[in-house]
Length: 83
Image: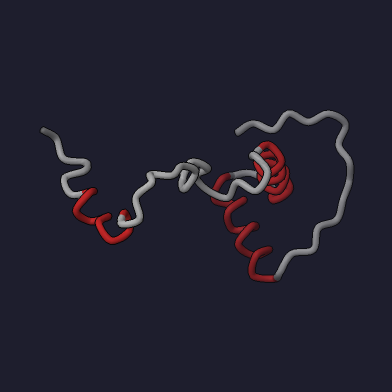
């Protein structure tokens, strides 16, 4: 993801010591600054749908059946196999 910045605004972010060390390590591995990684993370966070921590389609429908969790393994048997 490329961060397109308008006029930068300076801010202070307090991180846990372990998180800060991990951020610096990741920045070194990627050849980027820690600040750039923070900007990228914030840009991704604010661009995501509100509260979307993972897939947003799970659990949005109703099957009308009460036994799906009991039958999940048998219903999913063979998924991913080529015919």
